Length: 376
Image (tube, rainbow, N blue to C red; front, top):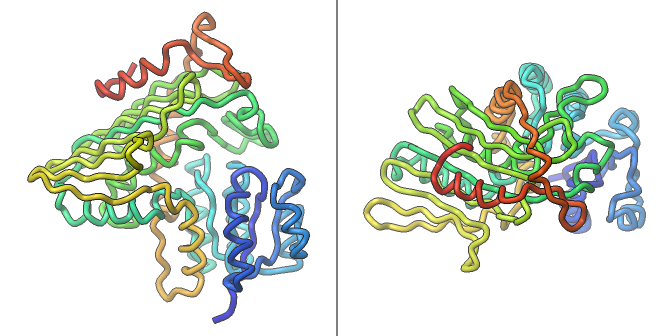
């Protein structure tokens, strides 16, 4: 079997997390890195290793495809480029692993599906939890029916982010639209903590590669930082099954609380707390007292890359999260965008270390909202 030819677009920022495993796979002969794409590669921490191996860096996908081809294109660029670059890669015969979120614009979904079918290639969307063994094992048990129907899912993530975070890259962070009008909707719910909103929909999906789209979405959106979009969100959803969910996430607290979730079903509860000093593990508890341990969903965050590479030569690719699955998140964010964004009062704002803007007492309030299962 020939080496899988791979190209990565976006080698700074999150894209750098692909480079370490890619370089190792290239060194052991598993893949061939045909090229990298980034108009500003100087910030990449692997630049010396790239140059040592003689891997060419192109300024655009068009420049790359003018010289080369690849079996797998990995798109890890800012949100506003995801759709255009995915379509470009498909048109040149490449399969695609595109970072989350898939797009900021619900109108892109039809074009992506049409281009995928025309090319006869696959599109994977890089929500790493959807490709983690722990989550997939958990979902298989959910689908088997041992927990019964879902009733209420809740998730909490409090990740303070400072001025540098919102000023990163080319100025797209915290934006609703790019200068050309392309929808971005960069926010705590659609970027850094998007995985945990998507995982609610993914776990409720009626197949291993499916997600359940809410039939009703209510959102309370707040802003502490000088950005266009929100940095704090409380999102309540209802589903056709009768289940409900509550997602709470913020970049504007003074204290970090890593992802916590509790998924309740008719016959049991599945929970996870990344902050647990005893070890990070998804645990399912059935009504009869049986306990099932699924492991740490953060232990294999690059498994999506492994799956994508294997899919290139697979007769039937395994796509846990494709376009249709990722659309649930896109629809939810589109519904949230209909809600007003409320500015936190200036008198409650505080400035912490590293130019962190946070809201006094917000951590305690949001933790209480999670515990009491309420909006603000």
